[in-house]
Amino acid sequence: MYNKHYYFIGIGGVGMSGLALIALEKGAMVSGSDVMHSCTTNRLQEKGAKIFIGHKKEQIPLDALVIYSSAISPDNPELMFAKSHKLNILHRSDLLALFMQSQKALLVSGTHGKTTSSSLLTHVLLEKGMQPSFALGGFIYGSNTNAGYGEGPYFVAEADESDGSFLKYTPFGAIITNINHDHLDYWQTMNGLVEGFKRFIDSITSLEHFFWHGDNLWLSEMVAKGYSYGFDKKNALFIESHRQDKWKNIFTICFENKHYPEIEVPIIGRHNILNASAVFGLCLKLGIEEEKIRSAFINFKGINRRLEYKGAVKGVIFYDDYAHHPTEILTTLRAIKNAMGSKRVVLAFQPHRYSRTLACLDEFGAAFEAADIVVITDIYAAGEAPIKEIDEGRLLHEINREARRPAYHFSRSQLSCQLVKILKAGDCLITMGAGDINNLSYDIMENL
Image 1 (cartoon, rainbow, N blue to C red):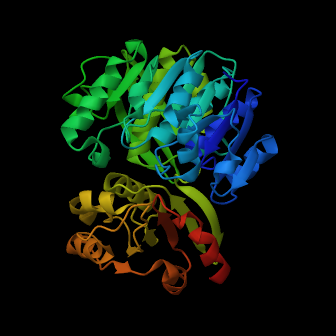
Image 2 (tube, rainbow, N blue to C red; image 1 turned 90 degrees about the vertical axis):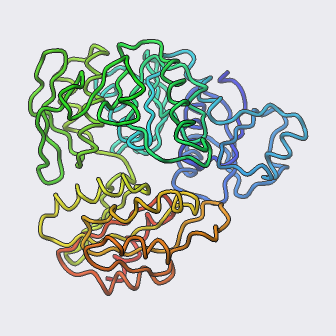
Image 3 (cartoon, helix red, strand yellow; image 1 turned 180 degrees about the horizontal axis):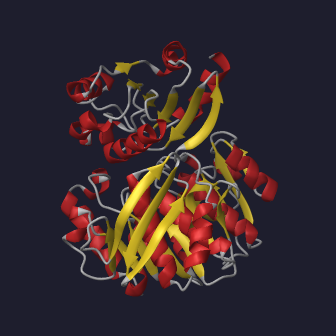
């Protein structure tokens, strides 16, 4: 399959770029288009990919296998051309399934924690010298990559439940981090989402390598195989004790009648203790020595857009995080506040999608309780049309109903200058959201 010419529509996306990189590393011809140049497209170009800016039908080679993702609109001119000319076309998830066929797939699924868990698992396998292939939803610090081809037995990837594509895979082993109310635009109901996860679980070929979050209500009611993990002692792998020491977690787990004390990992938050525990257990079942796992955990540098350190200016430190669901927001803010102590945590939050903001509206009220100052900006549409039932004013009202102190709304164009007025030495500013807010910190640092 690797001697083909692949053409990726939207090649700069994190998922698409990873598969393009794997194809390049195996010697395939790769080209693709995106709306603008980025660090990602530049890296691919350096590896030999041909990058086009803008979507134009004449750019597609007639002998190419055309790859698209769920983010590509049906009226995209390149996709329409490929269909009308009956070119070979694959969804991104189908190409990932093909790439994984020759190795044992270790997949991470769940509403939250996929990228952190899969990246940590990949890091351990790389540190052990097991040469995994991997396709991740973020860039691992130190390696500056989100994907790679390896000659080893395993392929680590995220199994995306948002569009049902995780049902195309046949995992050897898996981690399911949780199930929460999300992606109901695709699944319609929670029952539909749960049924999807049941089918995914049924596709796992080695239950000795299946770990699932036993404290999660939806999972605990539907799963009776593999290994549960969590804080509750009823779990097969349970977290006996834990603490956060500044910007790292230290925890002890019990698994198969053995204690594993004082495991350290330099990522914070209760949610990341769960993620790391699942990875630790899976690595043990893969036959990796305890000390190898511990040492890999300690030198894990994290991933971009997951509490990513952006810099410090005039006594203000800047972080960025991808969190956009209320559960993620709550756990991330609590972890930051724990690390910062008495210093102010200032949040700049960009809501993501009208549909998600409306669906999760009731949960947003309590999600910001750990922040000292909350500023929201305009909803990032991500291609959606506005919905009359939701706007920034209604979200702000919901937040202020439960907030310890008032939250504020500033338009995207006002946001930087208003935050410059708010921030003072000792503060921590966290920009948060799945849209384009991640580079706001640099603008503020220049003007602070």
